[in-house]
Image 1: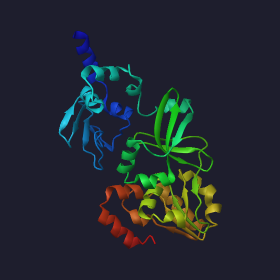
Image 2: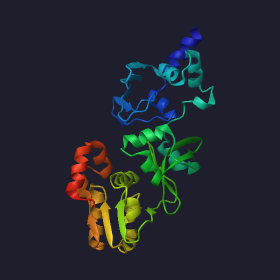
Image 3: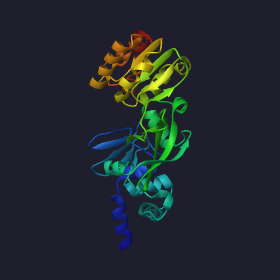
Image 4: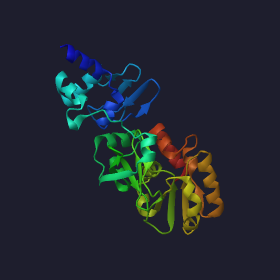
Length: 300
C-alpha cells in the first residue's frame, strides 16, 4: 500500500495540460492561472473544461466533475486506479504522457522536421482545434491535411498546409512551425482573380465566409510577409487582387507596398478593423456582427 500511495502522489503531480496533449487535446485559450479546453468527454463548440495551472486540478463544467491527473485518466480510459497508474508510468505504450506536447526551440533548431504521415484531417483534437478557430472540418479539408511528424526522438501532429516547394506549414494549439523549404502556398483556380492572406487560418476563414472563392479566385497564402516583395511580379499579372493581410505594422506596410506596385489591388482589411486579422475577428465577433460587416464592406 505504501508503494501505491507514493505512485499516486507522483501521478497527481504529472501536469494535466501535458496529459491532455498526449491524448490529443489542446487548450482553446490559456492564461497564467488556467487553461480552457473543449471537453475530452464529448463533442462541443464552447470550452467548458478548465484546468487550474496552479493547483493542477481539472473541472468539467458540463458535468461538474473534476479531480487530479489520476481521476482524469480513469475517466478518459474507463479504468481503475491501478490501471491509470500503469498508463501514467508509461508501461503501456499507447498511453504514455511523459513527452512534451510541443518541441522546444532547441529541439527544433538542432533537428529537422521529418514528415511521417499525410492524411485527411480526422483526429478529434485537430477537429476541436479547428472549431476553436471557427473553421469547419469540411472547409479545412479543402486546403489542409493532417500531418504527423517527428522532431528528434519525439512525434507530433497538426494541421498542415503545403507550399509550392512541397514544404509544410504546421499548426496546432500549442505550436506553429514549418518544414524546409519555406515558400508561399498557391492554389490555382482562376488566372484573372487573386486573393491574398498572410496565414492559412485567414484563408480558411475567407473560405468559410465565401465558399465560392475556391472556384472564382487563385488563393495565395504568403506564410510570411517576407515573401511579398519577391511575389510582386506574379501578383501584378492578375486583373483583380484582394488583399486580406494582417492589420499590424508589417501587414499594413506590405499592403501599402502592393497597392503601390500592383494597381489592380484592393485593400479589404477594413472588414476586420479593430482586430489583428480576419480569423481573430471571426472568432471573437458575434455571427450577426460578422454578417453585417460583410454587407457593409461588400465581399462580392
